[in-house]
Every structure is written in C-alpha cells, then in structure tokens.
Length: 322
Ligand SMILES: NC(=O)c1ccc[n+]([C@@H]2O[C@H](COP(=O)([O-])OP(=O)(O)OC[C@H]3O[C@@H](n4cnc5c(N)ncnc54)[C@H](O)[C@@H]3O)[C@@H](O)[C@H]2O)c1
Ligand SMILES: [Zn+2]
Image (cartoon, rainbow, N blue to C red; front, side):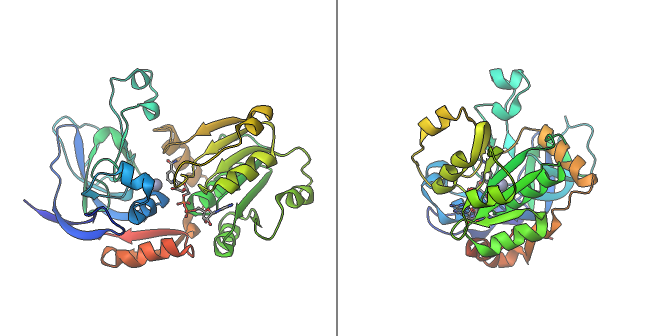
C-alpha cells in the first residue's frame, strides 16, 4: 500500500496528529487528487479544539480538512470529461442522488450530505479521493444599493465583505471584537469596520446616513451577542444568513425576529455548484481575496498554522503539501 502524510484527529482530544496513512483507493466514479495546498477553516479549529459540536459530529480517527487545491492524478473507469494533470478544487459536501431534494436538483439540501474532513476522510493529506461529480476545475448577482452588515471578521467574514463590496452593495459594515481582524478587513475589503467593544453600531449607521437599518445580515462569528446586535440593526423585513457555528445551544430572542418579519436562512457550506461558478466568475472579474491569506506553512509545521488561526491574529492560513 503506498503511504502518504495526513493530518488526523487520532484521539478524542485537543489537537491533530501528522500521521502516515494509506493513499485512498478510488472507485469507478472517483478521482484521485494530489493535494497541493489546503486552507485551515474555522470548522477545523472547532475540530482541533474538540468542542461539543466536534465531539458530537466527528468520528475518531478521521483525516480532517475540506479546503484544498491540487491536481488530478488518477480517475475511475466511469469518469469522463476530466483529465490527468487538471488543476482543481472540489466541493467538500458529498451527496447522494436518491433523496427528494437531490432529485429536485437541490443537491445542497440532501439530508444525507456528508462532509469531507468532518464525516468522511478529508483533504489534509497528500492524496484525496473525491467523486468526480464534486470536482471543480480551476480556470453577480447581489443587487446594488443595499446595506449589508457582517458580524465576525474572520477569514469568512472578510471574504464575504470583499464579495458584497465587489457585487456593488452600497453600505458594507463588518463588526468584530478583535482589532487585528478588523485591520485585516480594512486592508482586504475596504469596508467600514466596527469594533463593537468601542463603538456603537447605531452611531455608525447614522454616520453613514442609514435611517432604516441593514437589508442583509451575514452572521459569521458564531457569537450570540453578534446575532442579537444584528437583529436590532436590521430593517423590517430584512434577511439574515446564519453561517457562524455557535459552540453549543444558544438562546435567541425569536419574538424580535417575528415582529421585525425577518427571514433567517441557515447556510451549510454552499449551493453546490452555483456558488463555485459565481465565485470563479467574480475572481475572473477582478475580485481580489488574496490578501486574506496571512500565513503559509509547510505541512510539517501544521501546529504553527493552527496556532496562528487560534491566536486570532491571522487571516486565512494555508498549508503546503508539495
Ligand atoms: N455554515 C457553514 O457551512 C460554515 C462553514 C465554515 C465555517 N463556519 C463557521 O463560520 C464562522 C466563521 O468562520 P471563520 O473561519 O471566519 O471563523 P473565526 O472564528 O476565525 O471568525 C469569527 C470572528 O468572530 C469574531 N467575534 C467574536 N465575537 C464577536 C461579536 N460579538 N461580534 C462580532 N464579531 C465577533 C471573532 O473575534 C472572530 O474574528 C465560524 O463559526 C465557523 O465555524 C460555518
Ligand atoms: Zn470551511
């Protein structure tokens, strides 16, 4: 069995371990990807920390990681339309095709969805087996004139800020409690940053000449106080996308949401594959999210990468597997 390096949650405890594992075997519908770079996601930090969500969700042992770029080195006998050497990333949510949602074309709502690096062997490895269906080869539609509030200036919040700015939103405001993160958001996305420990959101809104509130809220912190603040800052009939993962159950003031007629949408991953197409189009149109990467490490120094993420003094951290 050929071996590869991989980062594994080997024990139900804090941390990840660099191990030697067998290169995965591929089935007729799969491709084998030589992973070159991986991103450390906030979700990987939950898994590293082994919080309640991770302990309840991730079986041990498990090779983690779901953000990657690499190239195809082998494919199964039923795969067509892809070639050896093709640079690619891939959709990390594995879906079936027999649920009602999948048969309606809504793959991202398949109740049987499994995530690589969460429920299935992941991408923090030199090789990844992925269904060919999930491969995204590498080569705007948010309406103008709306106000967007983003809570949480982690890598995801900052990239979202850059995207809504690129898509032409009028007022984009991002909050955090960490000055380093807000400084990075300012550099990358050039949006109004608010340190909520020092500044009131209401004052910022009046400064921007906003009278009615934000049309759209993107909750990307997982913090309950941030969600409460977002509900208050939204316009009647506003929309909230909930992406941040609270560490456990957290109380919500539902009556505020009811009386403001707010629509709350949970986001799990993305709308396969529409989000990938939109993102690639925006990158080709000049969206620049590169400055959000603040640290790059060879995989042997993965602990430095996770320490950087956990310090809160980083943007996106990339591990190099070449
Ligand atoms: N729904 C999904 O599919 C999905 C996928 C990936 C990540 N996530 C989650 O999305 C969130 C963002 O990911 P990330 O990688 O950017 O994480 P991150 O933890 O690096 O960023 C969260 C940020 O929120 C900030 N924050 C804390 N309290 C705040 C408050 N009261 N107001 C405003 N900001 C506050 C933190 O300082 C931090 O900078 C995480 O909770 C992550 O687990 C969800
Ligand atoms: Zn992720």
